[in-house]
Image (cartoon, rainbow, N blue to C red; front, side):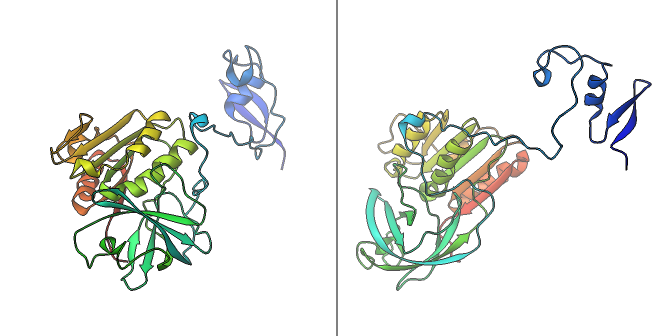
Length: 314
């Protein structure tokens, strides 16, 4: 087969190389002039391409926003596709109160578990039924490669898993982990990233938001976080980091008015969401009512929505 062929442009037959576009053909034969700055050229014909069509430019490396403020976290890699399910063993190595109803629990594994930001895992603490939890980072953004950090809400029920920490579950308590699970993981791409978290639903939202600031620093991000009690808005250090790296819309909401700071809005979380666009990508994590309401709003706007429901059994 010949490497050249004929193409008619504005009624004139032009001989071009197979694979060239009509624009390249017309420019190369001087039939039209290249606008100033097009492909680095001034006016005049454009020379034939010297590279094959299969050539790809080197990947552009993005510099993290305000990189001098923080170090790049290594817990999560750039997400490409979900990792296959893996099993790991570990022990509880840290139990820290974050608020009156919130704990930060760290499980150290014998071997690193490959996860994407926003993924869940099935965690079986010895003596308790397995439950799906969402690994995240500490509120200051730190985590070791072989650590899983969880944010757990206390319920007041002594038979519930979160309320067992510090009593039945202490340091060195054995844990078995299986994962990843769930479809709410972070996917780089176009469109505004709208992140909605109710209570400890902030755990997967925090890991997604932090990864997005490194991987897509120019992407527009809106973050909305709510709690019933303003004292349970434990994530302020995380939000301070996000604000310092350029996130312009950070909204805090609490249902109860008791001790509500000036920057915390009253009412339900969904009442303070921005008008959604068809190009938005929405991640919502929390209780069933919040997740369901956001899913409805996203569907009405034609936006993509990735829900993460808390406190569910595998």
